[in-house]
Length: 123
Length: 197
Image (cartoon, chains in turn cyan, blue):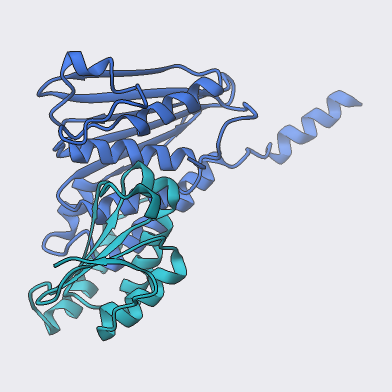
């Protein structure tokens, strides 16, 4: 059975340190995946999975991913909220892997709100 | 819920919502006994005794006081369907323990599913909460403790994509190996042949 090894973690630690040393900064973007029972049953884990893949690829240290509970809009789950500092948060609805990838590439990285999937913009 | 791993994630998120700093998830499978047991313990604020009777009622919700009934009632139904037992123990200020067991080969048992995805989602979304995952199949054990991981990582965040990917691969491979049907070794197969002859 593969084992968690201290050597592996050390290697990751050293390479991660090198990367982050180049650009220290505050987190400026927060992405919330809503993970209540309703969100989980509707596929929030797959959305989170796709988001993690995109995040690895983008290699950005200023993006923070968090989970939260149900927002009360269970019928539109999975919901994802994108909050870019200085802008109104946007809630996306009925998310899946592909929509998450598109929102990440277009909205998070380029700043183009994907109105087709948006549920609301919070003021 | 399509997978037991999703139930696990859901109940663990309850613990997070209850302010837990440590969530202990234990899975025990026995091929001989034909049982699968899941225990999720948290050190959150606990459920007050009068509420404890109500949390399993699907029509009871505590939106204002955090504990919500639907997730737990679905989990209980899943175990009932598979000839299992279910209980919740909780003490205010100390934490909550949710236990569900299943008949391992029951036709209605949902697949165990992507536990690596569930655990990494939990870790990614709640970096300040620690998780212990223990998975036992017969005598073999896989164990992951995020406190140990964090200690080794020092000032690198456990949320770092490289760390999350490493943990996901580790959990996926380990649990798959635990759950894979055991192929009898060649020597024991030969012995069987001899017996047949």
